[in-house]
Image 1 (cartoon, rainbow, N blue to C red):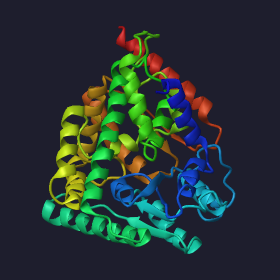
Image 2: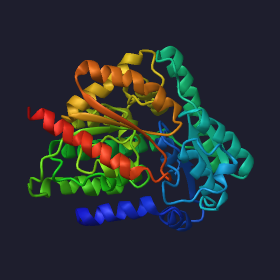
Image 3: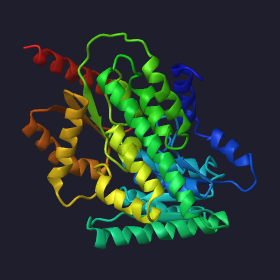
Length: 388
């Protein structure tokens, strides 16, 4: 079995490879293989996987990609993720992808789905919406129809039906993967000095969307790590944080918007595993996926919820569950969902007595050093005041 360092190095290589060579090699290994790219979050990867296709998470080009063509499609002040995703497409880095799914994240991503159809007419493209009504007979029925249409489209792309048994097997696999990712985060929340901080853990978790075996291998290493207490550091919970900002909080517990928040069950590993088993072996798998979103999906800025305060309480519960002492709001510039939610979340945190600090950033702006310094001051202030 590879060592923890080897697993993390592998995940980092996958994350930083903007030519997606591993996915290209996977597709080239057999002539009929398909790759379906998707932007996070709330995309039913289980249906893609059940069709013998590779779900490939696309999160833009980060700070490694110079955006040239992307600025011709979007205003330069808009979040870098869609602009750099356009750059990935027009530069040929995604020329091997057979389909692209654009979930209901924000208006910019919704518009990107239409642009992608025009730019790449040979690629299957779908804007994938989610319900805003959480009653089974209304939002549930709507979402069942959405999932059924996606299943039909992927069956056409595949060239044969996706069976219920294939779906059940994929649901079981992905629920187990999510359980293990949660186990990694829970381990780090309990013993942050033993788990990698910042970039390495976040890269690993994000790439686990497409290459889930790494999570299995890494989780298997956790019980064998020897206790080694490092320097005490406040436990902070960055909210909607990206890779560069996570480097700032390298010694703190983090919750990355993505893999962990795509849970079909709650955070407890035992109950989550039981839910996964029941969904994998009982009933209509499409209906099970729909109801799991209605009842168990994690609260994020991209998810509409009728009770606005519930998002804040969800964050407070995450703080308590992680024994965090502060929250970092790290929002990409011009991210409407995150910036609209932030005042409400801050208000709930203030009522709960939780410290927080907020940043806006662009990955290519060179502003990360001031953010590191401010986040470090924030951490020091928490440590200082907690000792009073």
